[in-house]
Length: 245
Image 1 (cartoon, one colour):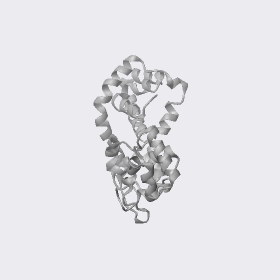
Image 2 (cartoon, rainbow, N blue to C red):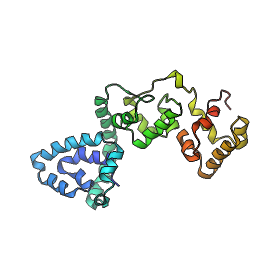
Image 3 (cartoon, rainbow, N blue to C red):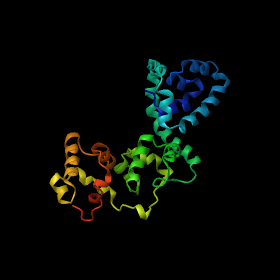
Image 4 (cartoon, rainbow, N blue to C red):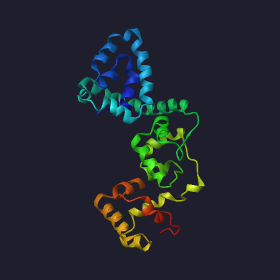
């Protein structure tokens, strides 16, 4: 399984000798890069390929490089060895570099509460699976107020949220606002009877608690929706309740 970030790393640092081509399973192209590296032409081509990887979504990358039989072969041992050594060393530097590159294109921060999924994927660089989570939460009438909300509500990893922070903005829209959306965590604590006492429908309370007992606590609000199959509107009144326990 090829990884887009790894391909970008190899293209940026070792693209002039075609290592990224070998990684992507295009060995013939890699040999050509290696043979003609002294001309600097492969380095110029790799430079533009690097930007192509930067602005390519994970879905597009997978369609191009992870769905063909030829790309399912293992990397040779030498490439695997150097890849394992290079990735930890340059990953931190690269994450900062990627944000700076996107920052030059995204002159104004992208409004996380109003932008399209395409903006989330192509401008901010959020993987499509997390962009879909954000859209599902927004479709239920919720607002993201800060980085913590992206983790608590849409299940984005904390370190990834910190990386994209310079590219996004949290504009507050009163007509859709939810003043305490993170109170969803009560669904990980309260029993069926306690949920019913707070005027939650019995069947809904049972489904939420049964799923929690069988498969563990919910990591984010989006997980409650996905795992139970219940719309957030079914328990939104509880989440927004003014009397906190």
